[in-house]
Length: 524
Picture: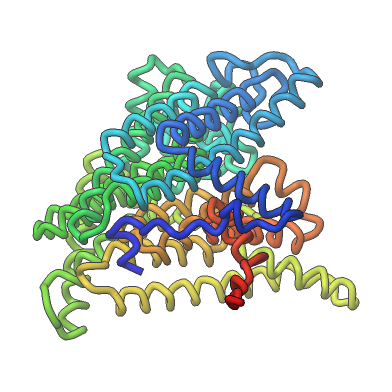
């Protein structure tokens, strides 16, 4: 798994030799044409294709009547035109096409990063080009940014967002834009992030939209910090930094589930990965403190402190000593978070809200999908009323399985691959938690990208493609009545992406037809 991430792939022999094609090999000729077109799609063309994808998504989410952004007065600087049938259809087509183009461009860029000496400076230019349309357009695919702004406004007014939801705000404009499920719910985010949101509200003169744009630019900064850490960790492990950055930073999940909606997970991952990178250079205390900063934004960053503590000493160490180091690292992180919480005047009340996201019922969550399916089956056989029981049972099973997976990852990890296993742990937590959100998947994708072997590449491609398909707008309302159909379609797309779809036409041609052995003429 490691070799393919370290050295350029050798060019394979082309089975699409025109002289060997049978006269009626139309399928093979078409496959060869596609393969040759892919060969011509080099780095500049791929970068332009990705920029077109994000531009289409931004346009599709901004047109009048768009179903993808928040259609409320004052929700954004522009694009809040009245609903229009043609514009709505055009917006949907543009956005869906943009998502497809973005995934294709990213997969092709990963392929090029395997075999070409792409520079990090070039990827930085691509990142700016791909991100720029998204930071200009309104927040898409999630309304969480409006919740962040409401939390900041509450803190600015002296109201604790850890005791009350945005409904207590006197200004209804802050409340109306928050998703109804969160309007009366206290925030689960760390005190440092609430302070950041409050600072953005104050800096913009209590301008909600401007504050949201600041929050999104801070998410971009978090992704950039994560990318620097990923490049450093990959390079120190002997892998190509540019391949790791392509997988982690230019990933469609990063673009559309972290940057576009401005999720605070981007800042959390920036500090978490920076902490692991600093710790890998021997500065363990500094690494733990950086992870603590991330946890003061969002709690999952504490997993970085766990891995730093587990690998505090090099070489073989008894597990009891490792456990003591983990406890010490977590204690140091807790002290740092306590200092931040007390200094900001919030205390530890936020800890009791960490389970708040579990109130969401999402059919893309594996445990929820299984419980819904079995609930429907139970209803067919006359066992109605068991849905909530099944959901609670499978959520409990999922949490136990996540804990077991995390323990296994920690035990299997070494100092050289600690970040990779930390990412796998976070991926397991995201998949098996009561609520799976696509931005949760970004945790594991970013961390696992530091060791971009071929197996890791396939896994990250599959997971990322699944989340993009499974969480596109209107996916759940469209397919929630058939809980098997939607996930099956998303899994099929994920499998195709894991098989490196840019190579499929070439491989298909090679498998469908192999030239017969040349006949031997006997001299006469």
